[in-house]
Length: 465
Image 1 (cartoon, helix red, strand yellow):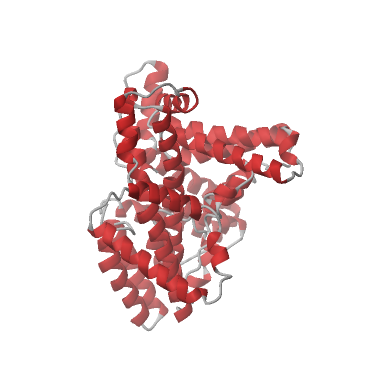
Image 2 (tube, one colour):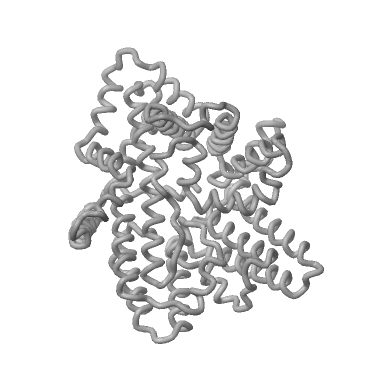
């Protein structure tokens, strides 16, 4: 089940929210939320509920071991990390590793085809952060297994993030209230995210998927640039839209999740971009990988090594494909170049800032071409077309471009361009902004429902991760 489905919007969410509001005690509210979260996950993958339960049970046991036997705490921590990495390795990377070994050493090991459990990257990282924080003394151990399971399986952030640290919602698991203001703000935030997903990302996805699925001979420079720009909007409004919906759902049920995006396309460097993009993932990698490796405390060479390891891990986290690995290393190299080249470290006038912004957007766009491509060869082909394919386009190439440039697609990209800037903050300064926001939200919600009822293209991008 996904947030942008009629089953979720019209049946699941109203029923769960009503139950949460009318149940009198926090224990009953938690029980209802836990049951709903398990049902939410089981709706699409009932078998993998057992994997979710196993992961939570094992990490719960390791954390208890750390708390009760401090002399052996390191061994429990190591066991937890190895278990979680093995879980990811088996279910997410087994086929990729087998194929890579076969290709490198000319072997014929049997391919391991295992269906990817949705959300495994998110809930595994959450479980790891909980055990590590218990080891560090940054949160209390949770002795109630069902309460820890609620943290791991909480449906607003279960399959698409943001990655929520246990210590950030520890107190809300036992004491929280839902106010009228929180409920209203949660609903408005959810509608904002739903609109990003349905009205912008989905229409951009039609353009992207059509062009990437076309035969290589039917592509032109115009098609390659159109696909790259459309994917720039698709991935941002899909990711940030789901994060907005998760944050809004959190408010509806009395939880506060941290922001996950902060207008990344206004960044003036790749470093600034990563402060704004998928903040929960970059924060996780910094706290639980970069700093434990030594951060920037052990000399320049070690710092470079640590950063490359972090971005290698970032690429691998996104999926079992060489394209994700390349994308992670690409961003790591850009960060290193920004540290080495003095131009990126000094203050700039307005023209210089504009130049830096254009560089950042172009660099991010090129990276996303490889991120979206099925293979590195496809990614290089798209890049070569973008920068050297400006000859006359054949009739098939022209027809492809015009077929995806529908009024709805153009409107979605125009809306994406505007919404990539903090125009919402300006709207908050307008007099009587609350009625305006309410009316716009209702209109957007109605449009989203009409689109979903009409059966418009509604891909779930997280199946790749």
